[in-house]
Amino acid sequence: MKKSKLLVENQYEFELLGFVAPIKDYKMAWVVNNCLKIRLVKTKDFELQFLDDSQLKISQFILEKDHGYIQLLKNRSFNENGNVHYLIPELKIMDYFMLIQDLTFDLNINAYIEQLSKSNSIQNVVKLEVSKIKSKENLLTY
Image (cartoon, rainbow, N blue to C red; front, side, top):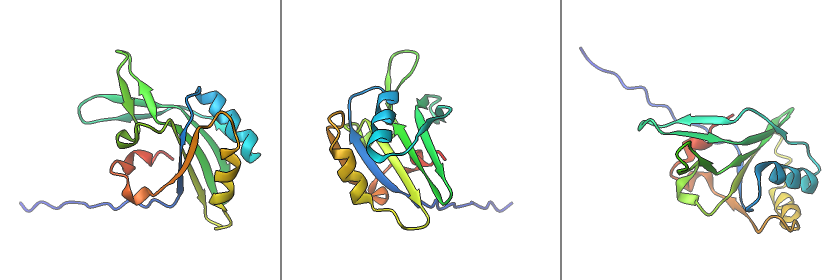
């Protein structure tokens, strides 16, 4: 019998910011909310199961908009053994990622970077190119 393979090409229709900010997730959400004058809300942790049976539990905050969303994801997770796992392993230096989808295309990502850079809690804000990230599939959480 002939076998068929289903090839799926994911769409990454969002802007991605990376933060270096060694603070707790709820504090980071508070900082982002104050800087951008938005209201991110804590939602159920995102759980990712890998083929080697390891599991990743990521803290997330979301703001749903009429034409998109803003999502804050923690990059680092600790399992019950105390081992560290990363949402994006090749970017271990990043503490958080912010996915921003705006289907109205009114978004000014540079204004977001400028506002977030003013915070004393955030050491660095960088715009990341999603297509260049090897494990970008891990970002498909929404």
